[in-house]
Length: 93
Image (cartoon, rainbow, N blue to C red; front, top):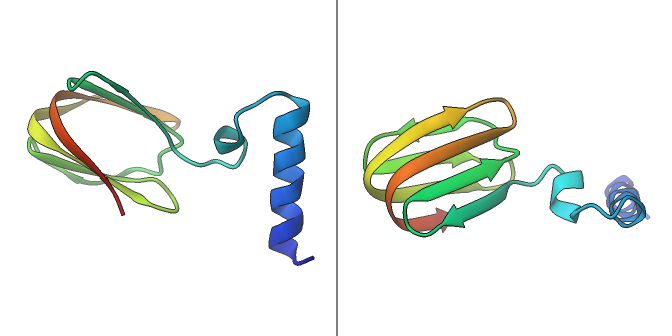
């Protein structure tokens, strides 16, 4: 088993033992959408592009593109962010 396989196995076991979601343990982004007006994201790696119609977020292994109207980055810290406005589409690249 390669180093990557061992690491994933350890993360999976850790998630099971502590009853944690696997995405949180692995550092993957977690996205929560409330209606079409609010998006929360945990485990982001920063903002790549920002505008009122499109925001690009670095999710580590993927880029999250939020499209809409009147988009605003309402809050952000090292662990999570909040986007509000009229969210029309979310693309994962």
